[in-house]
Length: 289
Image (tube, rainbow, N blue to C red; front, top):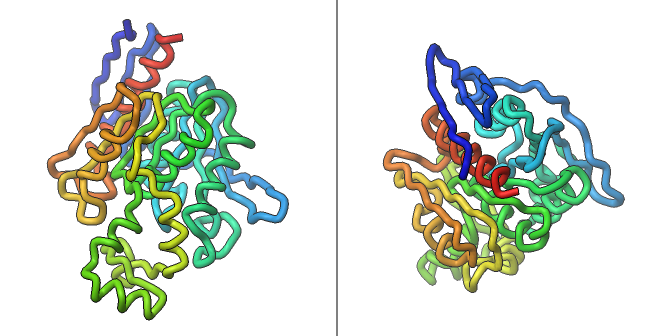
């Protein structure tokens, strides 16, 4: 039976009684405004260096995968670091090639090259079983990495999981629009998170992305899976998380829908839910051993 967990939020401090010990972390963990770990670089032969920040600790560790055109310095990534430190579990966050502090040219990247980044991080930096936490496109990469490295994965937590999103969004366009895009060779994917009103994707990018789609057949994963999505998500429809839940072979799958949640799920209560979800998984995984 999982150990009882008592949580209370008082004066901006979250107290947590876990396995007979009390961990305390401030409200900065819930707001994601603190950054303490040092930036390091993973050197790879003939490939761009990847910037990462790592906290050593117990297993299972937690690895955060950012979204498209995002980086490891967001609120969720920083909140998770302080949470993992409070419990003494290892934590790893990093920037994909062409993003944040990592080397490389963003325009030259593909879903496949970012998948390779995740696998490099798991192979070279992660020790023992890991809980992958994927935000948006990071949720897609989370699934791809888990399929490729099942022995490395303890559990998955998807935040607004954008599995197959670029491809399905493009294919949902009217055929006339798709033909026009194919003639131009590029498409502006609408997004209110971009100053330009969207992200320009080449047809080559879309074709390559299609080779990594996962929702067209059963997803061979048997680990615990938790999927959190906002009903007000205007970027990635919440039913994508339901599709993921239906496709994965695992019988331990929960989908949590936030009635007022938007795509980034970065409000204080959203981050609390993410932290609590991961905490419950850690309890489950450690009591199963």
